[in-house]
Length: 139
Image 1 (spheres, rainbow, N blue to C red):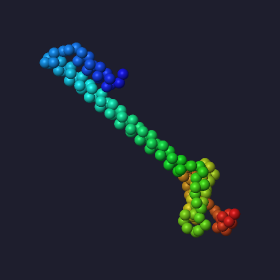
Image 2: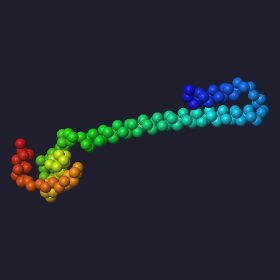
Image 3: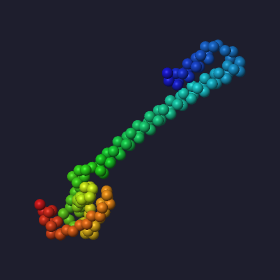
Image 4: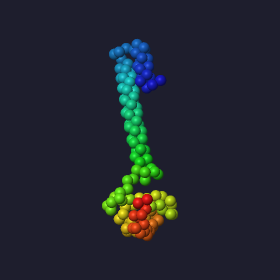
């Protein structure tokens, strides 16, 4: 039985007693029954608000899951566009020999010759020849 049904049942019991309406105790019983009915209505409203908030949180969780899938997707390189120009948007794929994670770095980081792996913090050093890079891009 729901709270509102229980409150209505108690109110019906009080009305069924056919108490003297001018008696102070009868007035108190009726006020208590009205109070219980109002409380039951408030609880029902709070439950509805709670359900709405849960639905919104579930929706945000699903949206966040989609964003996480995009950010942490292992096939990230399929979505990455490579440029043939010499601008800073050029990206290179680097695999850490220590932990095996794949990182994408720009030309500036490649020219510096050293980065830290974002996963294990291992220092990665690069020694490359620009002619070799040009040949691999042509293939």
